[in-house]
Image 1 (cartoon, helix red, strand yellow):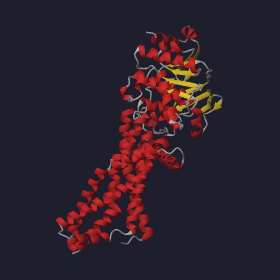
Image 2 (image 1 turned 90 degrees about the vertical axis):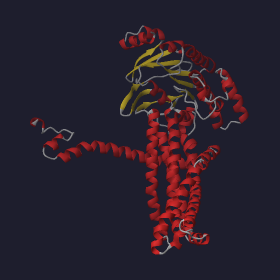
Image 3 (image 1 turned 180 degrees about the vertical axis):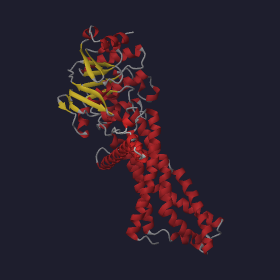
Length: 239
Length: 288
C-alpha cells in the first residue's frame, strides 16, 4: 500500500498508510475498534476503493481496476471473514466446493479436493452438516478451507479469526494459520484485538491509531515501545 | 439578540427575525432537501446500473440454470395459493359491484364483458403484481439483505463470483417469466369467480356470461394484460435485489430495507401501470 487514504461515510478512516508485506511473513494488525484495521483488508481485496494512493497485489496495481478484472486478482487472495461468512443455504462440503464449481472443475476432482482440504482443517466429518450446526471455531476453519479451495492463495487475510472463541479453539486456529504459512508459503495479514494470539503467530506487528500507523516492527520492539497508547494497549491486552 | 441579527447564520434565524418566519423555515429545510435529493438520485443511479448488469447477465456465461429453476419454483409455484385466492375474490367482488350497476341501465347481459375487460386490462395484472411484490420482493430483499449483513455478498466477490450474475439475474429471469404466467392464472380464476356471482346472484346462464366475456378477450387486451406483468416482474426483481444488496445495519437494517423495498416496488407498479395503459391506448386506441 503506497500512501493510501480512505474515507467511509464522510469520515476519514485511513490516513496516508504505506506498508508492504513480504512472502512468508505473517503481519498482525492491531488497534482499537474503529482504527481502520478491517478497512485495510477490504482495500487489499478491492471491496472498497481508496480516495488516494496505490495498492499492489503480487506487483499489480488494483485500486483502479474494474470489477471484472478484479475477479482474477482476488483469486490470488484468500479471505477469512470475522464470522466466517459461510453461505448458510449450502452444506459445509458445498461451501468448500463453491469456488471449485464456479471455476467449472469436474465433480470428481471437486469431491477429492473438498475431502482433502476439509481433512487439512480437521473437519472431514462435517462435510454434510449445515453452517448453523457448527460452532464458531468450526465455522472459521471451514472458512479457511473455502479460502484454500478457491485457489493456491499468495496472500491470506484473516479478519479477527479468533474473536469470540475459547482459548483452546483460538489456539487451534492460530496453529492452522502457522501451518498454512509453513506448507503453502503464503504471506498472511491478520487483523486482531488479541495480542496473545498475535504473539503466537505473527512475525511482524503493526499498530493503528485513528487511521495512522503508529508502530511497525517485531514483537520484541512492540514490547519495548515507548508510545503511551501502545504501552496501554499492550498492558490491557495481556491482562 | 439584536447584535446577532446581522450575522449570516445558516439556521434561518436571521430571516425569521427580520419578519420572514416561513423563509427562515425554508432556509433550514434546504440542507434536508439537498440530502434527500442526493440520496434519491444516487438510488436511481444505482438502480439503473443494477438493471444494466442484471440484464447483461442473461447473455453472459456462466448460466445459473439451477438457480433460475429454484427461483421459478419459489416465485411461481410458491405464489400460486395467494394469487388464486386474490383472483377469485377480486373477480367475485367486481362482478357483484358491476351486476348491481348494470341492472340500473338494463345492461346485465354485458356483465361477462365488463368483468373480463376490467380483469384482463387492469385488475389481474395489478393485483397479482402487488400480491407478488408483498411476498416475493420482501423475500428477495430479506434474503439478499441477510447475506449482505453477514458478509456473504463480500465472500462471493472475494471468491471471484459476480453477485449480480449469481443472485440477481436468476431472480430477474424467473420474475419476468413467472409473473405473466401467474397473471394469466389469476385472470382465469377471477373470470370463474365472476361467473359464480353471475349465476348465483345475477341469475345469468352459462352461455350468456361466457359469450359476453369472450368479447373482452381481444388480442389487444390480452397483449396489454401480458406486457404489464412482464414489466412488473422486472420491477419486483430489480427493486427487491437493489435494496437487498444495499442493506446495512444488521437485522434491524434488514427489516427496514425490506419494508422500503415493498413500498417502492408497489408504488412503481402503480405508476408504471398508468404509463403502460396510457401508452397502449395511444398506440391502439384500445377499443374492444
